[in-house]
Length: 162
Image 1 (tube, rainbow, N blue to C red):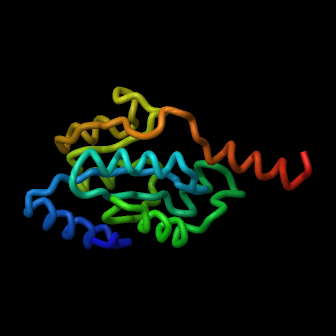
Image 2 (image 1 turned 180 degrees about the horizontal axis):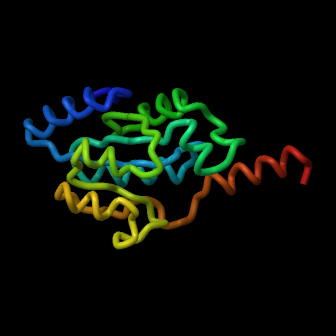
């Protein structure tokens, strides 16, 4: 299946209901993905291994600015979505503007919510909501730290000749 970018949440829910009816398990991975790097790829490959259908939810441009400041994101959400949709194992990409993925989790009802290795399963902000819908947390990805914020700072220093 070629990954689909689905902005309409109701359309996404209908597509995932059909996947679920076909016996497939749903994995949700979310994040800003505001400056893509190898850590994101490793995270998504790990997330894809946790179930049958991988949904990647990216923060909207407005949400990234609220989370990381007015100079971010460096890549607009349409481009981030297109790049993520091209990664093997990604089935759906969607955009959300809320501060956390709670509302998305309530709609999508994933079997697994994949989070990167910077998290612990017991401190994921959406854990209570995930439990409400009967899902579990999976910590996946590269244990080596990768940071978009650090990458952006290194690029700024390089541009300034430092």
